[in-house]
Length: 248
Image 1 (tube, rainbow, N blue to C red):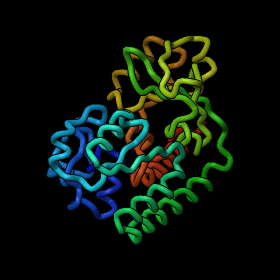
Image 2: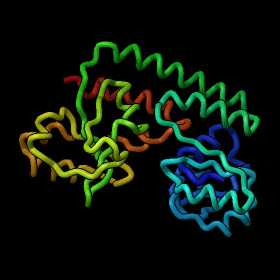
Image 3: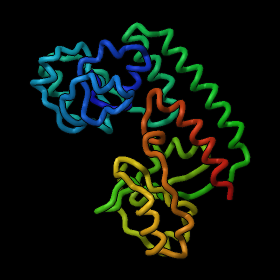
């Protein structure tokens, strides 16, 4: 059972597609295979009766994606859980080992580790002389929301020396309002494609509202930068491309 898009995709890439009996409506990869798996709700609200009817052996959870009440409810129903909370991109190596061990897919897990290590070394070589950039990473509007330096996304961006700025730091996903004074201290304003579907029109709107800072705005692939598991491997290549795309 996959109640988190990243973990569902990881299980497919470990060769477990035929064993996945349920997913959330947000689990969208890989296509078209994922469309054959029954949805039992969202990452924040699941139909537990429907889930129990599917009789899963395990339900993987993520601390950021799934409410703590999920764990209690699943335990009450005697359903085993796997609780995950990667906060650094290198945590994916242990995640591959964990799932490979639980589901007897050690060989496939080792292949993912090798691919990750190769992409990581390639990125490390390219980033050696990169200047530090202060970035505002935007995940939502009405209200505007960003991320703190303690999040997985922040660590992913740190791999190319991009440092997220957010206030207050004690909130993992704080709200904010745009400030000219703060924009002057920011090098890039990153509009993520998820969870809010920012697009070109939002970049245009930002440039109109803040013409002196419009050139700082960029659309960014939210799936690659926020999903852990097997998607972390192409994410490393994406970061490498960002280095070449934004050189100044």
